[in-house]
Length: 340
Image (cartoon, rainbow, N blue to C red; front, top):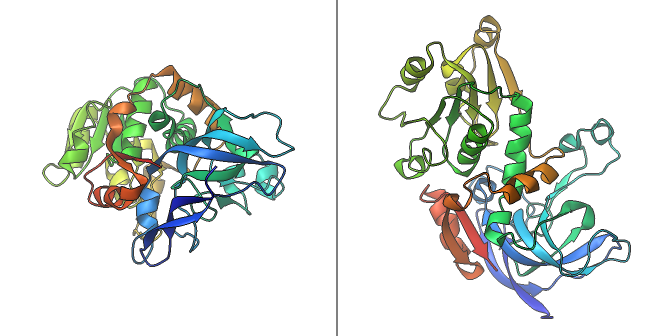
């Protein structure tokens, strides 16, 4: 095995550097050495590289929290994985001992850390991860499809919280990678009308193929009016997949409806009329990352019920990761795959 590898290292203040770094080694008995097969650029990676940052990260860390790999070596305490196994990675590492972990809410862990944000991740040739973070996948699953496991597991958790009923109407605000995953899951789950709002014509063009029954560009159409025309009284569910559109969800959802706030932007602030929530008996839900949803997500991906391959718009070698960051930043991409 090589002693050095190329890696994309976060150096603070919007800087991502390609560097030759040592190949990581197993240091703990519960760790696994992976050869990274594919990784993808998440909107969170773009937020980390903003000035000021829209999401925190540790300086000096190899970014990339959406990745898949092949097991090369396992620590002496690892029993369920062996050399040659292919895995997807749950990057959010929880303590298992805090109040929230003991309550069955590991996504609220008080001591959580994250591979690819606070600990070295997948924008590199090799990675070391704890065995508990790894989930086996079929040897026949394409790496570039397997990388959807992390974002999709978060969407699956959110849709579970919504308790969607067959035939219910949904508005999805934002047709980026997450918004389109919501669209596909809602379609597969039996939603009736699925209205997707997106200001980018490029991204919006992927909405109908993902299951949207109506696409709206709110810069050219009155979204609230369209939703009322389509549903009569407003949608049963409204999802903010962007992280800045809480006020817009309240305009399109019916009385007694459910709002899901999913997208994250640490800089976003919204002024909300609290009485509108009270008067309309709205249910407002937040949903954060995955919560015991990696195993069902692997099954969903392997079932091929979703059109994930159609969401891949760009593929770059690791050496060209900055091109991938740029097309994501400019909304000229849906899913960008990085091959180390």
